[in-house]
Image 1 (cartoon, helix red, strand yellow):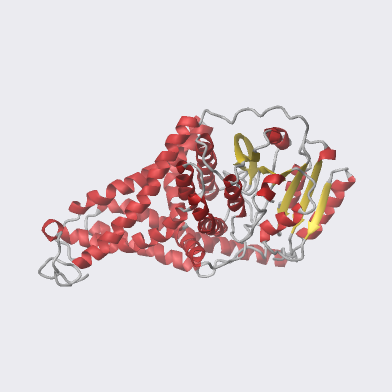
Image 2 (image 1 turned 60 degrees about the horizontal axis):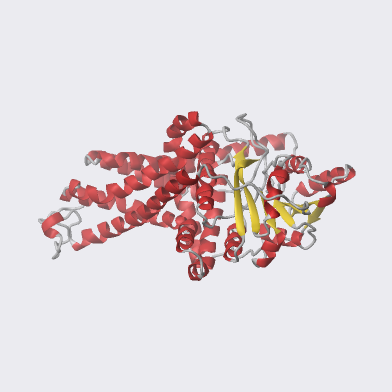
Amino acid sequence: MAMIDSGGNPWGWSQWENPFAGIHQLSWFDLAIIVPYFVLIGLLGLYGIHRYVTLWRYLRCRNRPAPPPPPLERLPRVTIQLPLYNERFVVERLLEAVTKIRYPRELLQIQVLDDSTDDTRQVCEQLVRYYQSQGVPIEYHHREHRYGYKAGALAEGLKTATGELIAIFDADFVPGPDFLERTVPYFADPQVGLVQTRWGYLNRDYNLLTEVQAMLLDGHFILEHTARQGYGLYFNFNGTAGVLRRAMIEDAGGWEHDTLTEDSDLSYRAQLKGWKFIYLPEVVTPSELPVAIHAFQVQQARWAKGLTQVALKLLPRILRAPIPLKCKIEAFFHLTPNISYPMMIIVSALMVPVMIVRFYIGWLQMLTFDVPFIIITMLSLFFYYVLPQHAQNPASWKRALLRMPALLALGISLTLINAKAVIEALLGIQSPFARTAKYAIAGSHKRALKPVRYRRRSGWWPAIEIAAGSYFAVMINWAIGSHNYMAVPILALFTWGYWWAGFGTLIDEFRAKLAWERSAALQLEPAES
């Protein structure tokens, strides 16, 4: 513990002249700690206030569905694009679902856009030949490189696409047979450039991680998309489970791969051109959630980096555009929320010094400055993620409420990896498109994951996260010892979140090692990367 000088300064620094000394007895050194802390808390609070605005918008327009589409004079030709990369475990399920979509076959084209480097290629070719023999208008396209990653594959497929409309499904999605019947009619309006459907989750109840992930995504799809559409604000194509007008893609400049979220990039460029987007929350397209904590983190880091890249690329253009101010403000909050992760790291690092200062100067005097901001932020999250669960099933809100501590801890677990992703984006550091391995898991049935070589290794991340969790565990002990009991629940969430990420990743990788050993014993060859 630091020595305390006669001025009551726990740091041992001399008490410099201070305009606040008569009130809080703070030195300039104390201010150098406290001021950045409260400034960052205030900035984080602004995003909490924005969540309340989104909640208010959602409550006002949740019962305003998209107007029914005008009658179609003719059915347009549709191309379904299926971008794949090493998806041997889910590709059969995907192709089975897509080939069952009801639409006149003479107006349908299915493109399997496969960049795989493992035996997915052989599996795909065999499946495509089978469906071709059944009269399905399906084609197989393989690239020997991954130039542009997913955006590059989509752009390459567009060269031979024959459809006026382009439906896109990632490998882990399972569209229903009526998908096109329920989305295509909205393109009778020539200004409609996109129809986005809501994601559902095949393995929502598989474990606590997947259940909490579903709650996080429901906040985006049920609450945010509904509020943005209802108030005429820009919202984004989610990269899958949607239908795009080909003319819109070309008018907006086509698929570009200078960001990791090519879907959001194209969305804003298209809406700045005046194209209308339609969101259909009643049309649910099931998908598979990551079941391993590190896979989830890698996915979220990719989204965080990509969205930050889009902000750097397009925000200046958006702010200069002749569009309503409300659209500019919403675009800013939509594209920049991940900057909160680096801010959270700084806030976390300042927590202990701030607690020490509070303890020696009378922390109750300072409490009222940041508690309102913390309440604004934390309480907004409760409404933000519990309300969508109630909207789906009024009886489920109690279970959702019980899951909220886990949801907050999971969000905290993303702090380090997402902060790294955001800083890389700000510095212009490029990185490859990191895929998320899927295993054709549905329901809550627990089983061993298949051994794969393309499972991403975590490296030093678990050790860093465990160390961070241990830091906050020590802080809990200090808070109790200094009678700062109100800080304990928040510190406990940080400890839980970082330990969940660190120890959870180590456990998952230990299980993966066992799966490798079992496959070797049975002389099974895991998938190549």
